[in-house]
Image 1 (cartoon, one colour):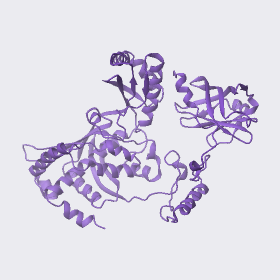
Image 2 (spheres, rainbow, N blue to C red):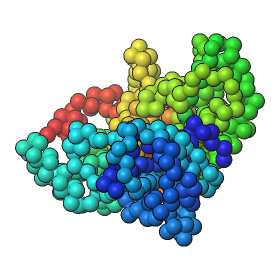
Image 3 (tube, helix red, strand yellow):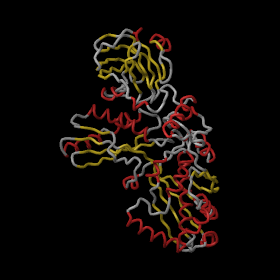
Image 4 (cartoon, helix red, strand yellow):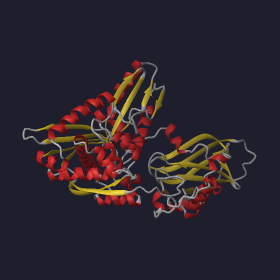
Length: 513
């Protein structure tokens, strides 16, 4: 895998240089791809050659080891995101505050990496250290207790329930910083709901984490109706995750020429991007021009992970290769805001972000009247009228409350909840067929879900996914079909409540505390 020097230099953590009692310490962080670290071949500081016996290394919270011990181990795993700390014995107190560092590392698959850089000694800012933390293991009970005492000292208040948590502390690494306790959100169950999907087949009991009264009851009522109609037919019709870099040129003509070059070299770019992760597959690159800018929207498939970080890294490496090969780029930004992370957008409603899922059902008129006390033609008319209202308001969803069910499921199952801003986009359609029954469907064009990584491996979140048999690899498409089916149940329930004038009375009965 080719990596340009400009990208390799970012392995070094700027500001990590510290003068210690015994010498110097600085850090390298693997921001590219999991690798095997073999050896420090050469190191010089301010043109002073450092001998190997003067050097020790430590990975993350491990104890420093000398280079000869590293050599006997024949290399150590250097996972993505891990930190390699380099300790140098010697007296550097008389040296200038800015240091020239030249280091050569031997790694696999990157080979020899030569870094030449400058860094200023960090003396630490007291304000940055006010919240107690342990740089080696910030999830030890002792440091957590210290933080809890700090909260009491700063606020004069000691939370009881917040601090009383039964959680696997080791599982929290990578999910939270400055951990002090757990927020308790009630979880209710709705269903079961019958799903006739391509990936989700059968009946599923749905965990919903919410503090909104009537929400679980409303979804449960909708599921009861959909089950009477044989269940929900669900289909994932597309799958894509984006990163959208922008390249800046002297003028529009050069920007256009660059876009043409990208089209011609798509296979080479794909090879670079996919080398970063076995689960990342580059589908295509959309090219957009404006002013003297070329916007590239990389469209990836990311398996069972949400994928934002995966595609960021893959695009980062691909763009490094592009910058090395193509001369004439004035500037480059990895994200142009055109991928619209954590923001709803029409480009993703049209082109898909995450999973594009359709859930649909045909409901018999007799069942709708019996359970919801409303006729199909009234639901269909309300949907048409509400679509006009949605158009006038300029919203991202002509349905009623997709965000309710999605958010409740996201919290329960450890999804990135901020993705609700994109995932809640929806296209609702209703019609009365020739038999007088109601056809209803919802399209979720940008549903971002994961069954691996992120918060999906935490205790209660993993258990909620296990309730759905959606925990682990190979389950993301199944989970997406279940989420879309739940959203449809919520749509018909609320639409019925509004049309039959039960909406306010239901909230008065169930939603007041």
